[in-house]
Image (cartoon, rainbow, N blue to C red; front, top):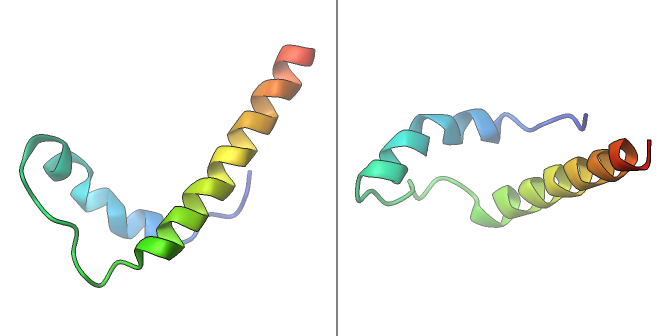
Length: 55
């Protein structure tokens, strides 16, 4: 598992509110950094799934 940035914890408090309410993300969140971290996590998960499927 890749080491995840604390920025993901910062996003957690907005997860439910953004799903159900019309809120904007706070401006102090670095969207470029968040996107890069999500891409890293996505590549890790896809890689693990391929390993599992390959047996």
